[in-house]
Image (cartoon, rainbow, N blue to C red; front, top):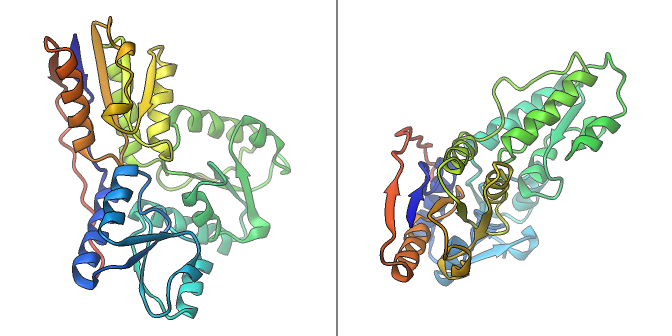
Length: 306
């Protein structure tokens, strides 16, 4: 068996920054430390922080008065920030800078009275946060082609669109195509809203699909970008599976395979990938590991004051 490791592994820049923010805040302020929503969508990261005294809350009122609270990498709506201030909480913002850029675009659209089509999962924390920067009377959600076809605009209407950063590149391209066909005056963001790491990993999956019989994606079920990787592999015609940890892999799935591809979501610690490789090689001693050379493109976001 050949084990082929996809080009891009480990934390993306936004996740690495958010995790580092929590670590530094723990070191400086100690436990308990409160985080509004899961800092990133990965079971291993969340459990490790819980063991160190981090308390994840879904309601700002769950944070005691005058305590520190960290906003997750997915971003929060302005009303959440206001609620935190009313409780005299000391806020540390771990929102990914790429998501912050989308918030800025949302504000610009609203200030110009331009309707905003927000493409993504309406219940995902990132979309909930972004929607808070758009005037309610200008906000329209689109999750699939049917939603795009139902938008109540005239053909000549002026409207803009923004997208969730962790969507499928192909699916998003198709939705934008529908919107452009319906609304010729549609305003695009200055730059694609799809995260560079999401794009890179989906490209890496497509490359991997041409080389292997089966793909295993490391990532949690709560992770949008991890689920999109599994879907991308399937769309390329390769059986693809999403696992949270090495023990989740059913070894019967790979028993008679000649080649196995491994990828991981942007919020997955590289140690999870290493554990998976060790488990596979422990059960298939003759398996050989092949590492596809990484693109070498690294991005590091500046840290806020902690």
